Image (cartoon, rainbow, N blue to C red; front, side, top):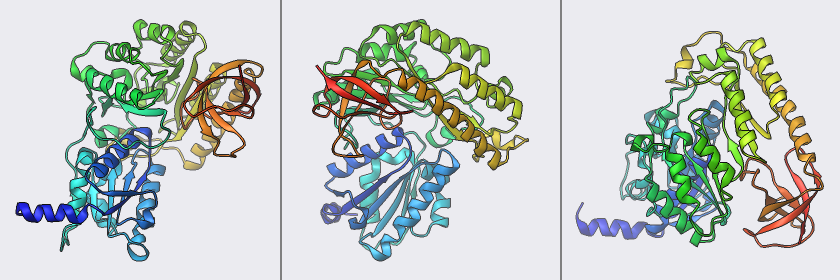
Length: 459
């Protein structure tokens, strides 16, 4: 292509409208923000309504069966816009695309392009290619993962302006039997500390008060860079960033939790007293079949150690039910342990066979109806525990960060205390007093549900 024709093509696509659909986890959200930033910088016009877009991009999730099905349904649904809307090009990006690549093009004829996790940064170029005059070819872009943005990468952030996700690493070196993340995201690749801190300073200057540190294996941050105690070193730098009030690491693996890390949590005001540590199970035999490090005794001791050393700690964990070989006795042990430990928040997922993982080859599979019943039992137990813990806050006065007008009604403000992570842990509804989004106020708690609190601004 001659330089002149390249410029003409670029000019022709500058007013093209892009509609974006983000699915999956917060890590996917950051990828979406990076793609949106690249598209906006390149001159594409972004619209919140995909029905009005000429290019529709679905950022897919491929973590578990339900997520894969949601992604496929979204592709099919938005594919209809090519007949009854303005859509000319439909693109699937993200984890599902990285994992299945050509299979998606074969099975979903409405797709024009498939973009894996290694090509997130090329999305503007890819859109121009697919919009080229006379284009007929449907294509896959699937470079080896992972693409990892840096502090200079344009991002168009989604969600609240006072809270942001910061991806500190990509990929995973673990070998959990049930997990396909290394297939989709590759081996761990950490960003340099300097890059992360520079991004945090930029975000703070833009008014961000809370940064949420995300990766597939946050406790392992920096190992690939040869940095010893990498997460501790990173946090020590981040707490010096002016303007930040809350720093919240997610996805801590229950190994390598050092005294230095615990001391940081306990002593640094900016690091939220909040641990997000998925355990997946507690029965020793199941953990071993899962290829998880540690056992019941180690995990129980770790939880007690964290709670003792970090006063006021809120603890979120997650479990998988129905892993092959999970006996009734193993599940009963998990129920009993959950009841005894009284976590603040618990997520429960159904096991699903994921192609390419070692668990697919395991025998003694569990019927789905049994898995669903076990999930419901755990969630019912946890709801009772969460309600009890929420009611203990009635009458207390706590600091909260105001999110803005509640999505439920414009008569209430929504806020969060440091033990409530964005989007997954509930909110504090404020029914008396006013405050701007992103501001920190004192709230007296007057009522409580299992996952939400009610209060009024005081002082």
